[in-house]
Image (cartoon, rainbow, N blue to C red):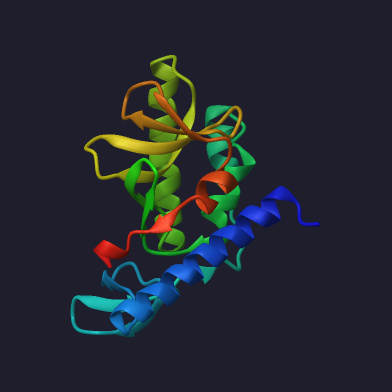
Length: 188
């Protein structure tokens, strides 16, 4: 039997691969991302033109963690956050849930992972200053200023407006949330 962290890592990998397969079936090619010459990614497959490349998610082979975030803020980061952000490099993936459209956020490469940590520190510091529940964002919605985040204390998934307390519970865990998603085929 797989541990819960192995299950989430495998679920994310399978989700990303199914997304790529469905994209290819619908469009006949890999997904496309803008090229940033200063931010090359292991996800990049082929240059399409000066501005775009095709991409696919790749498993992260190096050991990544959030120890620096935890140490800087004296906060233990929930294991699901580590499993989510440390398992694959990917461009964002458009999906839908029963609550609407969303975009799952991932690190594009190691430099992007470092920027993600800086953004996470800023988000957690804001939550601490506001004396709110600490949450960690991992998706954005099509509603302005709304994010989907993980409650750092218990791993529940919530919808929240930036700067406010989470206001609607979406799932009991990251695993439950990811397995309940569908791809946003309309935006492919």
